[in-house]
Image (cartoon, rainbow, N blue to C red; front, side, top):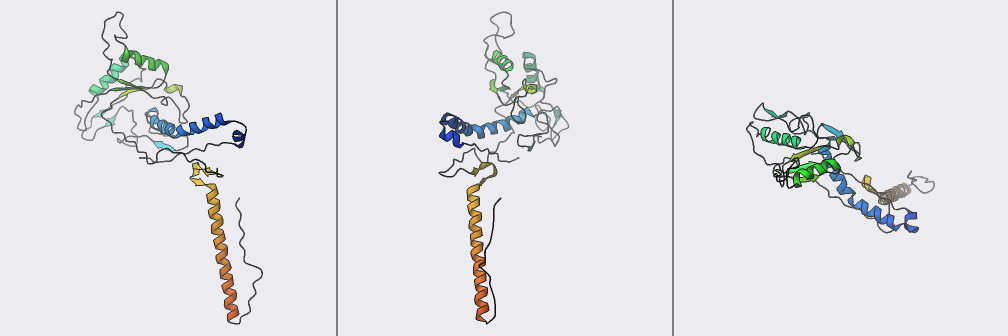
Length: 279
């Protein structure tokens, strides 16, 4: 499992505070409250977006490995997934990558029937009850026609039962057709697939829930992106230097005292000082 942290600072300028820009201030603050959840949604969705690759580079330049347990070159959507107890392989990617249609959906259902095995290569029965798509209007409307029509959407006469009615739950993934930065990617607008809500071997671990760090009174220099509070860092440095200066002063005073005690001649010019600066 890959673990990493992301953060973003939201700035409220002096002009915004003093020139009646409070609607903009409120918009920035409320927008900041959803950034964490949106980033999690983007990163998780990109496991599907880049499911035909072994890795991708995210918006922060981080290389994300999206291979499966089948090996370092095994893509999430592939045509030769291996099984442990047999040489049989299976595919979970429809040949030709067709757009959503009745024929394509039946082809995907045929994969479920004929390409679902246990590790010994024996047929396994697994219910698939989710139809997921991008937010492309044509794809969304096609899915709704198949799932909500009271009759066969392709029939030329009334009274024909729609076999897909109630069969799937339609899940729209609005960030599926995006690039690594979250910008729209028209090459992926027709992505779709089916899934099972009862069987999954995917795991998601969140070790730090999204949260905000509000600025304190007279303090607005929190650097969330680097996990540092600049003013506190400055105060810590100054305090340590002050203690070091006091220690050095005591050392010089001890040297003077001891040399005078034993009758030696020692001259200390000026007072010990320690200069420092922060650039």
